[in-house]
Length: 78
Image (cartoon, rainbow, N blue to C red; front, side, top):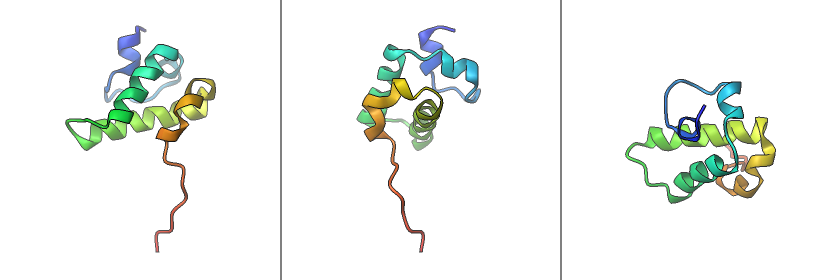
């Protein structure tokens, strides 16, 4: 799988194979998009956020510099 495919905003879903395709460069591209928050659709941003979250769970060594982009604050729904 190429780097471009690893960071594409496709609807194919998050799989172990696709998570393993990420490297330091591709996670940086993903994080940059999230940090800039300039998406054509809110769903594109949500897709990237899901990728970052899945990477934080399955490949935490890649996401350490970008943990600030994952909203981990608990909230009260009441």
